[in-house]
Amino acid sequence: MTTVCLTFDFDAVSLWISSFRQTSATPVSRGEYGANVGLDRVLGLLRDKGVKATFFVPAHTAASFPDQTGRIVAEGHEIGVHGYCHESPTGLEPAEEARLLDAAVARLQGVLGAGFQPAGYRSPAWDLSSNSVALLADRGFLYDSSMMADDFTPYRARIGDRVDEELFVPGTHSPLIEMPVAWELDDFPYFTFTNRPLFGGMHTPEHVYTCWKGEFDYCHQHVAEGVFTLTMHPQVIGRGPRIEMLSRLIDHMQARPDVTFRTLEAEARRQSLKLASPL
Ligand SMILES: [Zn+2]
Image (cartoon, rainbow, N blue to C red; front, side):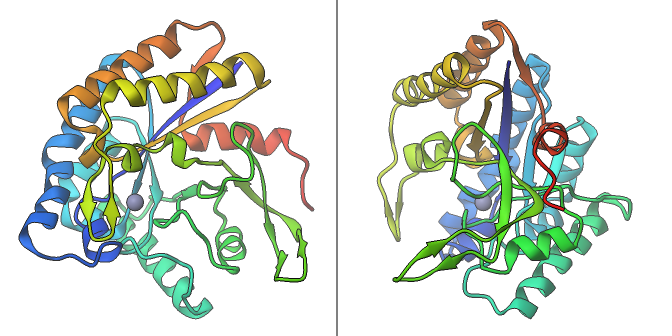
């Protein structure tokens, strides 16, 4: 059986403010496009296909676009934490990283209600500090989705790796389930053009369809109990021909035998029963 997890990082304007350090009108408008045009198309496609997905939402996005964020939940999708304003945890002091994580959850609760309890976290930079896994596990998060030590098989994230120029020594397993990601399965590098820093992007939807279909077909044919996780962004995948490509890919996957679509949270709960307990 293959599980497909469709995930969308709803970065909106925060990506341009934080990761690209751009607050001028045009970069900001690219974020608005995601919130006001791209998200609609994504939600419409998911509704048409009968698929529940996972959206990682920075606190900045939730507060800036509360109606759109509320619609994601109202349509039955999962929301996970994606930073306060899309900041990278690497390089943050432990106390500052903890403060921003707690502030992000509190601000999401301010928009979604005090009962909102996130199960998942995805680092905005797809990178973690040496404290991130312990911080997330201590706060009861079920899973992270930022690392790449496997492609289609989740695993337990570790605490206390030794990483230096002398040796790499893996640390101990934490309770946190890692739902791995891959740049090959992310719409951003394929499609997005930016000039600071330079991202080429601009591949055709047909090219990306070929890459993603090939990855899915390999997972389906060769990996027992594989989990195929795609990472997309409403401001990237939301353009018309790209949404049509994603529609075609979902049709292809839904037509294969033994394929189930789940949110990352639902799949991580299954994985937590399967993977050896670290305790
Ligand atoms: Zn992001």
